[in-house]
Amino acid sequence: MTQDIASLDAPDLPVRDGSNSRKVFVKTYGCQMNVYDSGRMADALARDGYVQTEDMQDADLVLLNTCHIREKAAEKVYSALGRLRDMKKERAAEGREFMIGVAGCVAQAEGEEILRRAPAVDVVIGPQTYHRLPEALKRARAGDRVVETDYAVEDKFEHLPATDKAKIRARGVTAFLTVQEGCDKFCTFCVVPYTRGSEVSRPLAQILDEAKKLADGGVREITLLGQNVNAWHGQGRNGESLTLGDLLYELATVPGIARLRYTTSHPRDMDDRLIEAHRDLRVLMPYLHLPVQAGSDRILKAMNRRHTAAEYLTLIERIRAVRPDIAMSGDFIVGFPGETDADFEATMALIKTVHYAQAFSFKYSTRPGTPGAELGDQVDDAVKTERLERLQALLFEQQRAFNEGCMDKEIDILLEKPGRMPGQLIGRSPWLQSVNVDAKASQIGDIIKVRITGTGPNSLFSELVAG
Ligand code: 5AD
Ligand code: SF4
Image (cartoon, rainbow, N blue to C red; front, side):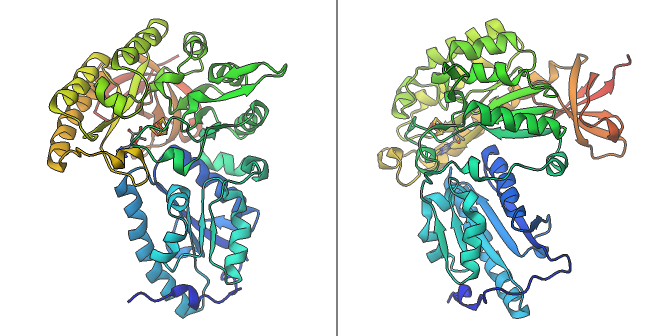
């Protein structure tokens, strides 16, 4: 029998430590957007006196920032909540406050259902409302069980405190910056249009302001985020329409920012201006995550991707014509309903044509509420497993080949953080590979020239180039 732990929760338990600050442990699941959101939720809570802790045992509030993209990701949340329920029981016996919040896409998709399945949860808060988190916690402390999953009319970014300089520094020399949220594409397998809502772009001025603050805090590389980032659109100073390419030209002028990236893009939104940006802007790194999902036109149609495999390949040719060294990355789904052996071979053929530097691949996972869930002709799990293994072996081989192609080259890396060995740092290549090098911790944030001396499947080894 499950006990309703919430009923044991006394409002206004004394705050535990002498520093008079509550501690929050944030666990992030899923995509980079969630990493960014977790940071901003921590900022919102800081205004309320919460400090972040890396130790769950030390926390007064555990916030799970969740992912709903595949069934496995969502199920992880419920097993974590089972463990938290036990912690809450122990804390209640000690008379200590312990609150549990569920944020992110599972919160948005399941709302009240989470409180039913996991009664120990105090607050359920969707991605569009996380600026209301302090208020929600206050209500929970007064005995309410709070579900905040409406699409707020106010702009959450206007209501969030800016990240302070010390925190920016502590978070490192690379940063994410959300410029766009939501998706109107409605691929038939995907929950994002339902969990993150329709496409919304942040205004240019707000983005530039955040980028300048990040640069002031020591950030050298910014990755622009959006579920459909290249659908970003805005207005220029004279009212003219802007797209992501224009935004990149603007951000390229921010002093201190040496590198720009963006993710994730849809092939249909790769417009001419964005391709020009890849041609003209040296700060725009030669790496493009451009998911195609499948290589069969029949499956692409069933997925509602609204382009063919040939159109995707032509697009890549155009990008490579202006930026020959661009590293391609992508996402693939195997076993979409109705996928035959021939359809799968078409995906393999497309991969062989593109030569990916890196890619992510998944078995199709049925998501309730999506059109894909209504389709018959589901592919057997054993078939999905076999196809995924073959596809991943090919992608792994291409990644290894791409990394080996870097051998003996002199490249610029941005030094990001300490490595595993003393005296070693980890840097990032223009093509997003991790690069180990012997360097001093004081050099973190510098861009240095190195020669690649060794390659592995997931990282490179290098030595400093003198001068
Ligand atoms: N099943 C499997 N993979 C999925 N993705 C999105 N929805 C599903 C699903 N239902 C993958 C796509 C997308 C990536 C973020 O996750 O490849 O690009
Ligand atoms: Fe999902 Fe398709 Fe939108 Fe990407 S473009 S978020 S896969 S619906």
